[in-house]
Image (cartoon, helix red, strand yellow):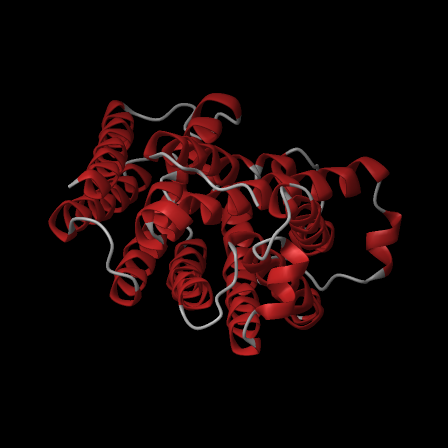
Length: 324
């Protein structure tokens, strides 16, 4: 299988994962009057399919005991279960994130949800796999918390916008759940007959897709936003909407595989932390493409600029934690 042999390559892969994780939601924003519960069926399938494709290509490169099928045969069953369970939990968190995007927008939902997930996921992952300088890593996590506070301030400074408490609560719950899946990934990749990053990604995304049949079905009947959704509406949607859902899943899935592969060198805590700088990317899309802060006052823009600076500093500190 392909794995990075230098920190520079691993860092590049984590940065690419950041871009993917912060960009996938544009495919949902690209639909019009389409319910996220329907979009998510294609998205869930997309993340699983791309993980399988990468497992049989990059994950099977050069063969040997670490190739995907060989690793699948030798891995402990409990590790396969942990990876799938992590995916199941992730899926609930991600569905809520997409719901939050629909309510409050990319520029707000991502920093709140992913900022919380970053802190929780890094702390729990580091406890299972202590790799890297804990002081620098802790400082980076602290700056991520500062960034979350700043985006909340920016949101509050939008005088012309009515604050949706429901949207904020949905994002907070999403973040708390999002931070839980990383320790399961760490466990699957580091204990006993461990999984390779590619096998981990396949079972994580499989767990996420299977979760759709439970959680997404419940949301269709008892939605967070709007009226109940009928299954027949999925089949009435334009083909372009299904394509956008699959594309969104593929983008997120590529980012996830790259993040896991980089973690084989730098550790899950550091790789996950750098990848979770994705709110910066999402905010750039939200501000400059989707104009979510159009008409914002100077104070709101100042808080937003400070949030970008805080996330950049967090990224630098976390990257330095590996060298330190």
